[in-house]
Structures are given as structure tokens and as C-alpha cells.
Image 1: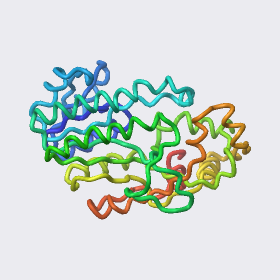
Image 2: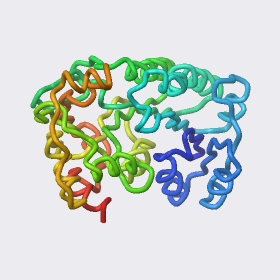
Image 3: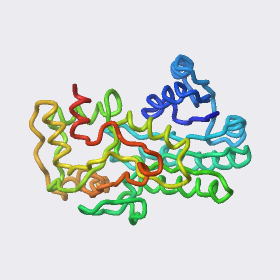
Length: 301
């Protein structure tokens, strides 16, 4: 397949583009910096310079592609994550840029559109399993743009194209993927908020690559892409602390966290026990790392 890949030099793209090239796909990958272009060329992809907010530039990039894989995001660093203004570019990429790409894909005869989303958009489910039919209710408005992106690509499906939306759970992995988070836990600076009995679902970064590859042949639809065994937030933090050989940081009440980080507190306490059953059934995909507990041990090692 001829693939246009946005976000090719981000954490997802870095693990996925080489896998797609190795599978025989021709990948045109968006890159703006010289070192990113050199890396893409080195792994066998074609680097292209595209302004994703400009219709003409995007139309030229899309021309000739069979598939658009839109993974471009601008997730702020951990130190800025609780500041709403730090998410503005991410919002633009998921709303404006997605709309421009959908228009270009429709005009250019693209057959398939693969869109990144996030499983954090679900309403709090307590200890219940959440599938793709579970209610959506974002607990902080930084998540609204993910739903906006899903609505944008629905236009592509309405015109007869194949759309695969991947709701990834919280990503983790080696290197820059989780460096700040791991450092915070190692220094015992990341407290447990509340009782920690809320469920959290994760996805190892390497498993995004196999999921995106599976999405190239998946039936049109919305899919959760997550590990097999969600754990409680307390269990997740304790497993990482144990892998690091440190004690878990102390717990703080929810009201204290709310005073410090504002609305972002809801992201730390919402319960999401997410099921990947639909995606596994549709594609045969399965995560290499079924649980974050074992995954953290491997990351630390």
C-alpha cells in the first residue's frame, strides 16, 4: 500500500514506520526537521514537508496515497500537562488538521483513513468492562478534540471510504515515551491520588505498531486498542515502584490534587477498565504486553 503517515517522527511513528516499511508498504512520512528526514530516509520511508493546516499542501501530499494514517499529536511534556494552554496545538491537530486531511483524502480518492483517538473519552465505568458501545463523557475538555477528530473522519465513511478509528489507551514504554513518568516515580514525587482503586488501561508503545499494521486491513469501525489486563491505579504505581526498587509515593486526597492541578485531577481518578475484544476479534491482533505490570518491569530493565 501507498501510505501517507502523519506524526511519523513522534513516539508512535518511530516504532510504526519501520514496521510498515519492512512489511513492504511505501510510506510517505511528514517531517519538518533535517534530523527527522535523515532518520526516515534511513529506515526506508520518503520524508515529505507538509503543512497539515494548509489545504493545498495537504492535497499534494495525499495525492496517490491508498491510505492516510493520521497519528500527529502535540502532547505536552509532563511538567506542562496540567496547563490547559499547553494543549492548544494538540487540539488544532485533532480538529483543524484532521478536517483538512479528510477533505484532501476525499478529493484524492484515498481508500482508507486510520485515525488515532484515545480511550480516556469514556465515562467513568467503575469496575465494569468498557467496550466501544459504552457511554462517552470526557472528564476534562482536553479530550474533546479526540472526539472532534472522530467526527471529522466520519465524513470520510459517509462518502463510502473505510475508516478505522483506534482508541489507544495510555501509552508507556522505554526512552522518551515514559522517561518523565518513570523519573517521577523513582524520585517518589508522583503521589497516589485518592484510594487508587480506579482502573487504568495501558498500551505498550510497541503494540501501537502492530495495531496500526492490523488497521490497514481491518473492517471499517471504531476499536479500543489496549492491553488485556487493566489494573488499578494503585497496582500500576506499585508495580512500577517495585520494578525501580523504591517505595511508592504517599497518597493524597482528591481535593488536595484538585487544588494543585485543577481539572486535570479527574484524569488521575477516573476508572477505565477497557476491553480490546472487538479489535482482537476483527483482526486477530493481540498485545505483546498483556499487562502494564509486566510491561513496566521490562521497561525498567
